[in-house]
Image (cartoon, rainbow over all chains, first blue to last red; front, top):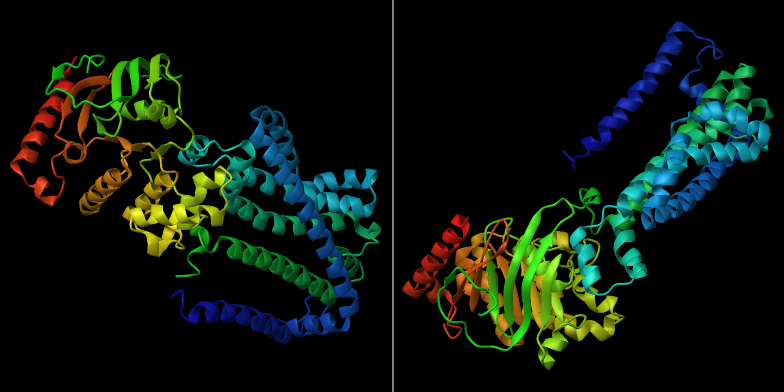
Length: 260
Length: 271
């Protein structure tokens, strides 16, 4: 099953059937585009408005990637700090949890009061992306094989050697798992931030285009923007999965299925 | 053996200069479990000594004490006075083989065997002859670029042994290294380990719960009893006895196994 072309053909077929069904519903019921545009109309809008929409996509993608990079830097740095001293972990972890469990949509208006729009949107994306990186990397750093740790001790390894040659490689698969989650969440955070910024969003990302199109009842463009957000998410996920595969394919169980 | 005061003295011990001696050693863990109490034992230069006993008798703890991975709660661990014993304490003079292969999955066979030297600042090229020699000793020369997940359980254990041998240790500590392997693989590794022992002329302390394995490999067996863990009997096996497949089926081997089993049974019955 795993090697058969059905693996590719079946999901594509289901997707195609959904799109065709959508087209048929619109055509048969003669629905106007401001109620439900046909997929063809969405595609037309996408091509017509490509200049505006792709510029917006780049804005959202840029926010997402910057937030993700900052989440990786902050999450890994804090995880290393946690791993070096339990007292730091005890003291700071609750704050990280509070940041994580408070819905970002509820915090966004607050951030918009104190920060510039761009900074607030970036912060929204960062807050949600930060936690999976932190918690997964911390878990990974604490998952070192105790026998290997003993072996490093017996060989007289320094703290630095133990970190670089034992803890970091052990944490790598956990980190990459967290990164994949964080990539999707960073996009969600960016979209939430842009929507909360609403008409103030002169940065004009894709979510701003959605809000704008909704006000103007330009529903085909709303769908086109939505499509591009999905596409952005898929791109980020695919890129991070590829990264994970490239790094882990030789040795980690999670990436072995693709080789056998 | 004066210090051990075993319950059952079977035969006089072969004479060898002491490498290290544990006297009155006790080990209690933080959870109030007493792993060892009043442990007296000696390891002599060049011998193959097995620590045999039921699970939980503290034999692995004794091994970790010798390695310096844990400190005794009471008693002393003294290294012999001569030059060989002094050098055996030095870093890298002790090789440790765990019950599991304990390999780094992200490193190749070559990288795993390189580890102890790498941690000592010996680069890849400089370390290469020693690594290849260690792989040769365990018969894995052809697998230097393989990754652990591509190897069978027995091969992983060979890599683990090669890693312990790469620093040319004077003292090799092995904690039930073959317990998880099938019997056929284990017999093969037993023979290969004896071959390594003869070639390197090192001292081996081997923890096992298999009577047959301990008799086949050892020049001396220390039978441990549990709760509290200490040495209950000592058996000496003629080191000149050839160890090969014919020994495994010989009446001498059967007799020694019977004797050892009895000593173990008495150790487990001891109050």
